Length: 285
Figure (cartoon, rainbow, N blue to C red):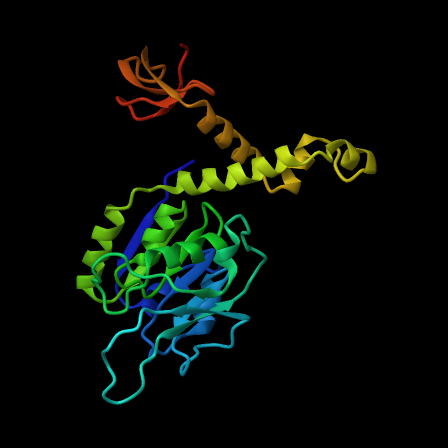
């Protein structure tokens, strides 16, 4: 599985979107300033999938297909002119049928109480766990997620942690530098999420005893149909088997550069990355 990519842009998002192709990203997840003027037509032009946007209850940027709610930790500030606001809306405009159901049921309640776990570095920062949940539900591994108002880049961090490519735009250079720092520190841990999802699907398949009944009824013709029924692709299965097989460290002669090197080799298919030429190779051990 390829490591996710990130593209950070410093500038006005409207100007940047004019350079983007139609349907060039798979999902938009963003948190604009709540008094912003949002060009929804342009967002819909560049995005082929869902558009997810935080907003205040008083200023909904568009009429959503559904609304989720983030309940913030109460504080004692900003009571001089109005009552406190501890709930933010998460507007969801749905395009397509992507809705991943492999998480625990508590992730689908639509009312979230995630808290920021580290020192807040942006005045409107969102919890990383909340952004990861939205990314996992409304996009697929390998998708490109766009945040036109990225701030400190919590959406980008969530994408890199869950195996999605990310494009972010920020008009303030100080926050762009912060975004660069945050994304550089990500552990690119998408494999642990994808492995969890694949494990759950494989467990469902193993628990199912209806294969012969389904085959007799014509619902399923072969094992490939069984994988499709449970949402397991051939690539998923290869990745699952590869991770289960583990690795071993060996010395070998690289078939691409002929250098004698040492690296970790997959027990599943003898694949590795040569540390000398950095090519993906299959070695004869």
